[in-house]
Image (cartoon, rainbow, N blue to C red; front, side, top):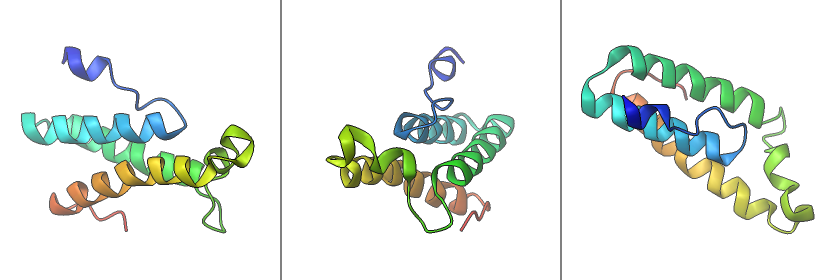
Length: 95
């Protein structure tokens, strides 16, 4: 429980995505359904807030004055897809 309190899932940028992934992995490992469901819902919130209708991660593409936008977008998408796959393997389809 102490490790879960240190998560970064409440951030709105890529740190949030990594924090959600951490929480999903931890909840599966510890078999904590309520933590798993909370993290799944948080991931859905992040996706809705981070990706616009055009599929652009507006917060990430503007980082470093746009010079690092692709890198930051990738760095946010990587944990998102890993988390989505773990969710899918546990009967939660967010695709």
